Image (cartoon, rainbow, N blue to C red):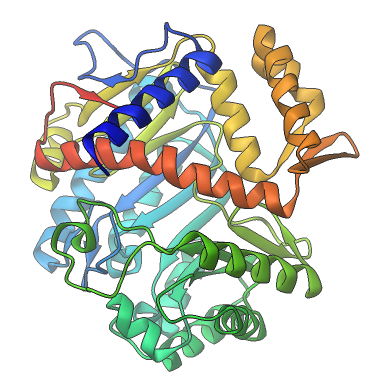
Length: 431
């Protein structure tokens, strides 16, 4: 993008933000003030980040370090200390869900089990426990351990059942590994099994994509999450371009594949539950992002609180030293203006593709009329319909929202994570 185009894009973005949220909302992450502390909470969720990976997928942007058994004990000690730090400040809140991501959490099942034990001691856990894993890290022993520690929802990063696509993505397993892993998980009695699948990859056809959907469903996946390739500049793909043929998909391919996905899922009794996700029947929905609030444990983990967003230092050693010493590992904070919380709520309801209209006034207060005017424009453009008290995105609406999300939300993530990954304790990051 040229400097002129970049400046124009930034100007348009500022105008959009001011229109919706107003000029009082800050867009600068800074270190939390020395006297700042999270407010007590009656209920929240927990995100536990496990940074270990045996193999770094070149498209993955998340905080990760090479798997090293000698780091498991320092990680566990620090994560438990961080659980205690939060419990001492927000109180014994009800935990409505626990999401365990990474990295590859199943490389550290002993650590995860010990951290969950401390969470249960310090909080009141009454929701589902969800965990991510990869095909090459699932065997019968892993499945038994997950069941024993109370995990009820599992997401498997399949990406593709085609060997050439896995090679293209730098995945280090054959399709038979995904077959075996999905079969083991499906037979184990988990409440929901999600399969992550990628579309609009170089050389991939719409038939390839729907064949992957069919294979995952046949093997027992009750939810399918589909997404195109993201190439963040700070990830291995963006920084080194080692995989020369891997690029962000063009708009035409992405549109054709997304339409094929929606047609296939609708024809096979999968309901769309987000711009990316489709689930079958009454199984619980698996989602990593749509929580009203959550606290983050681990290096690079974020927390969404009533008064804003806070982010841990990305550096493993800095995070471990801080939390083990009884101090906070929070490196950055973005406080929310009064209006921001309502628009944040609306953004994630749009991500769900269904907005409960009876909650709109309470969530947005004085901004509700503005929101309704924009929803009306969406409806008139054929991007949404009103049905049974909900404002629901159409297939076209969901596609264009996911495209806008790519541009705006991922651009924010890119700016924030690029700088946070370079400096353990940044003084200011503007998004």
